[in-house]
Image: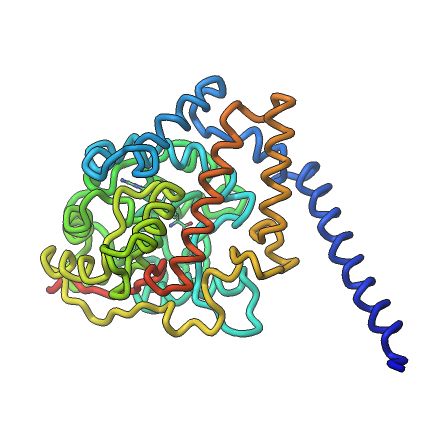
Length: 373
Ligand SMILES: C[S@@+](CC[C@H](N)C(=O)[O-])C[C@H]1O[C@@H](n2cnc3c(N)ncnc32)[C@H](O)[C@@H]1O
C-alpha cells in the first residue's frame, strides 16, 4: 500500500486550493484595482468614441485576410488600420503585459518581468548609450521600455508614436515615474518623422517597425535622423527561413498573427537585412535571439503552461478575462464590440504560439546597425 498517497493528495489539493485562491484574488484585484477590469473596460476603444467601438472593430477586421481584406489595402491605409488596432487593444495589453508591450529572451529561473527588463537593458548596452545622450524610441507604446532605458542609462529618451491614446497614457506614467523633465513623447508617423537630420545619438525600435508598410521607407527615416557614426538597434517581428508560403498551415498562422496584431504583412528576416543595407546602414551583427532563448518566448501564452506571476496571460487567465469582458459589455460598463477585440487577441495568441513552436515566426530578430561617419 502506498502510505504517502494521502499526503500527496493533501499536498496536491492544497496546491490546487492555493492556485484557485490566487486566481480568485487576482479576479477580485482585477475588478477593484487600478490597471484592473474597470480600467480595462474604461480604456477599451482608446480615443474612439465608446458608441463607435463596434463599428471600428468591424472596420479593423475587414482590413484582414480572414475577412476578405488584402495586403495592398492594409498597406495603403496603414495609419488607420494600426491606430484602430491600438485604440482597441491597448487596455488589454496593459492589463496583461504591464507597461512594456513586447516578448523577451528568457533564462531558466528568470521571471517574465525580469526577462522583459533585461531584454531592454540588452538593447541599451548594445547601443552603448551614455548618460545625457539623446535617444529615440521608435513606436514606443505607452513608454515602458523608454522609462526603463532612460533610468538604466541616465539618458533622455523621446518616444515616437502615432497613437494619441498611448501618448496620453505614456505622459501620465512618465510624470508618475518622475522622468517627464528629461523624456518626452512626439505624436508622428515613423515613415515621416518631424525631426531634423542627424538629431539622435542612438535609436532603437522594439517590436514596432513591423507595422511599417515598407521596411526600407522606415529605416531610411531612422537613418536620416540618426547622427553619423551612431547606431540603430531593433527587435523585429519576422517570418523566419522555415516559413513556407506554399504551406496552407503556415499561411493561416501568418494571417492569425497579422489580424491579431495590426500588421499589414510580416516580412522575412532577409527582407529587413536588405532594407537596412539599402537605407545605407552597416550591419554590425544580427541574429534571431529566439534561437538561443532557454525558455521559449511564447511560453507565457501557451495553453499548456500555467504561471501565477503572469496569470493574466495564461489560457486560464485569458478565459477569465474573456468572460469578464462579456459581463462588462453586457452590463454596458465596456463598450459594444469589446468581446470581438478579446476574440481577435485570442486568435493572435494562438497564431503566435503556433508560429513560435514551428519556428516559422520570431518577435526578436535582433540587429545592430551603424550609420557610417
Ligand atoms: C507592439 S507596440 C510596441 C510598443 C513598445 N515598443 C513596447 O515595447 O512597449 C508597437 C508600437 O508601434 C507604434 N506604431 C505603429 N505604427 C506606427 C507608425 N507608423 N508611427 C509611429 N508609431 C507607430 C504603435 O502605436 C505601438 O505603440
